[in-house]
Image 1 (tube, rainbow over the protein chains, first blue to last red):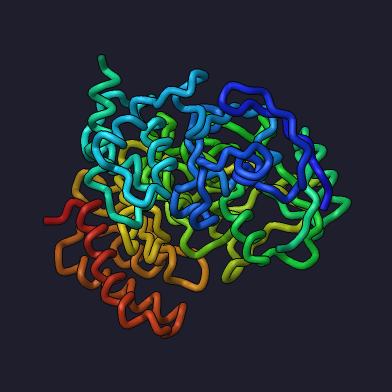
Image 2 (image 1 turned 90 degrees about the vertical axis):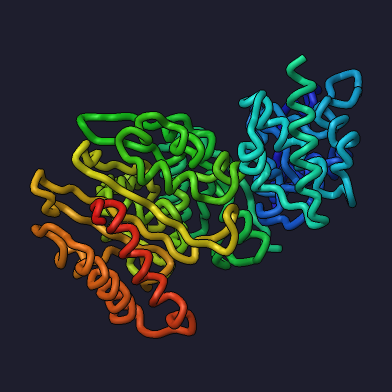
Length: 158
Length: 288
């Protein structure tokens, strides 16, 4: 296995990583950069726990070969609140709505919610259900997750 | 896990040259949503030594109308195809099928071309492209050829793509305003699930209500992707009444068994194919 060098921007910081060519974006984030907020659930693109924003759109980071991150701008759960590390309104809403049970799906859910609210600041409940269709919560806290995203949308309008 | 080298091609020409040199030692990767699962499952051919990434090639991106043909370049993501206003206007069945694939995360990476070359029985966009009579442009370092999609699938998970070729474009003549179509997908849950059945119907009727053209295709039911030629012939040229729809549905099921044989799932699939065919035809042909 050869090595590759990947230059990309993660949470606003330029990164330059030399790594095994067989690695995935998820491995770069968790293992090389220590950004363990992004979770690995199924590893085959079905559960959405590894969802991050790549060039402004949500992707399963377990499905992205490390080499495809070259030149990309990536935002993870750690960078969603911005440089001052405050909680993003969606993160705060997840706390306030009690949308976190075991918490494993939460970072991916929040990244999917961020992707939705960027494109649609005033989503209906159905819009939210569709937006998080690629994220599985095994605790079954969907009702609270939907409430949290509705709450975040309201707060972000102000 | 299998070990590979990874290389990101700078141009299509370079990618074709590498394929010419290395042949079956190369696995092309674009969206990666199927290939990375194969890598994880050690399911790639043992000969593969290099993952050749063509996702960065701008020359393989975009949708356009060219000389009356809708052309989808191979690196265009499923999301870009589903969101494209031209696709929605000119070929609603393809829009619907592209939107039915996986989750938004998958559609943001995966491509229609990948959906085709993987040749999975459950590929959602293939039934739509079959009724659109799509043509696939296959390029090698020394040749370029156009293959009708109905000749591309040569058997279960096998295609006419040669080891030194790349699918570079998918083209079809938009069906025109006379046509109505529908794509239906059945799955275990409402999202992010593989198709258990995918049915696509495209039809045109004249002013008297007679069927001028009818194309029906099915995924996840025949040994490889295909149409229902006997059902199409049965209804062409006539004004379809409700009892004929039932007959058409029954024939669709019988065709599936004649071509694919009886499997463990046939007991379930047979009535579903029959009913789904009838339902889709009723909708498209507007039969009461």
